[in-house]
Amino acid sequence: MNRSHFLIYLPKILLQIARDFLYFPLWWYSVGLWRTLLKVVNFISEQQISLGLSVWVKNIFTPMYGQRDFTGKAISFFMRLIQIMARSIAMLFWLILSFIFIAFWLALPPLVVGAILYQLL
Image (cartoon, rainbow, N blue to C red; front, side):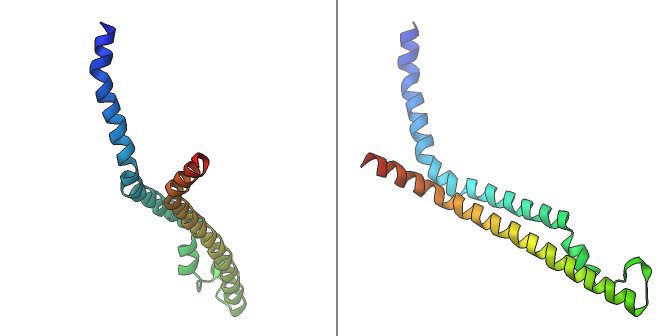
């Protein structure tokens, strides 16, 4: 009885495995890439929010602590300018890291296939 179930379901299982194996590259470079890009965009958006870069840029000419004299405005401007530069460097780091991740995502299947062929030959 068990043997008959094995003979019935074995071709179906093998066909499903073959279909998944052949579909994988198409999924990796279409649906998988799209999902990865959406996650990277979401990550960059979250990093921008956590760094508050747009808030610092928007308020660069607003004096800190309500000091409207020249000294207060100058100190506020240069302090915000330093903050904007530091946060821009941090944002650039996250952007570069994200682009490296996307490049790695695109290059991984050919690298794996090349490594497998290298080991076989």
